[in-house]
Amino acid sequence: MKISRDSDTVELNGPPRFDYGEKVRSRKTVRNDGTFPGKDIGDVLVKKGDEGYVTSIGTFLQQFYIYGVDFVANGYRVGMKGRELESAAPAEGSDPGC
Image (cartoon, rainbow, N blue to C red):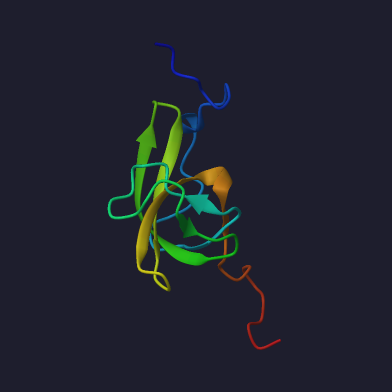
């Protein structure tokens, strides 16, 4: 059985894109692929635009970082690839009062 890789990129050659505790936003809707307990396959776990916080950083297939993200609003902790996330933290130097 051959494992199909998403790409030839090996993210592990560099540092993780996100840090522990960093606020992130989902760039896509994520459905249960059968690895999330208590939910049916195909159930929506995270909607595009949902925000959460990085609680763990692991690896997958010795190629990708997997970020455990706690989506506080829905109570789920979901593992996501870096390309599925974007930072939701305010840009450095930006004035949150604007």
